[in-house]
Length: 226
Image 1 (cartoon, rainbow, N blue to C red):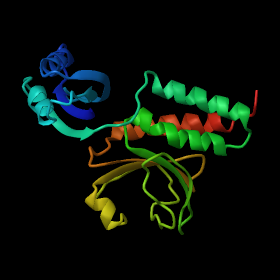
Image 2 (image 1 turned 45 degrees about the horizontal axis):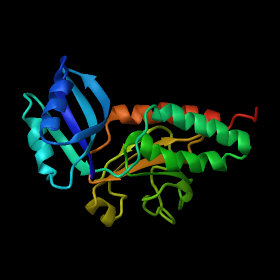
Image 3 (image 1 turned 180 degrees about the vertical axis):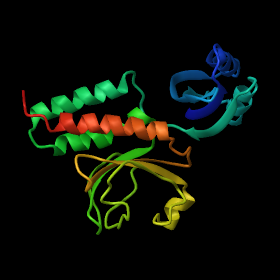
Image 4 (image 1 turned 135 degrees about the vertical axis):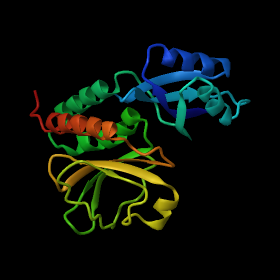
């Protein structure tokens, strides 16, 4: 089974190698590593790990924290697919979708389907609304139902984090600790939303990455056919 391990580590040479050695000694395979943030002497890393059936997840925490200065921020099951160069592959796929169909709907569906892969998140959705109930333009597998919901943050003038304790969230969503982030897509009335249950909370660096990626994606999706 795969897990997403988020670590806060000292920002010094060799630290990731030490963590990899400790995890390898615990019998796990590292599938991917994403450096989310660096600053003030620390780095935040997301590590996707394959855990053998005979190993307990708690062993991941023990192994990682055996390295001096390493803190485990969160550990959660991860079932999404992984690829290298995920952002570039998504943009290339959007460009090909634009060549096949001049309508942006195909690109929007592709964006919602592929963003969870890029951000190692649980799901993504593209929503449209203007103060009333929203419309779901596209959603990935595992996305919760937004149908008929009134979202107080739509229209969306700028990107924002949507923490699991926000008052507008249904009680069930708060119980599931659904963390989200959102950014406008083409106009304030349309938003791309990415979420995951049980944390970890999205960081501002992830939000900035989403802003840049969706900005490029919106341009690519509306390019005229070649």
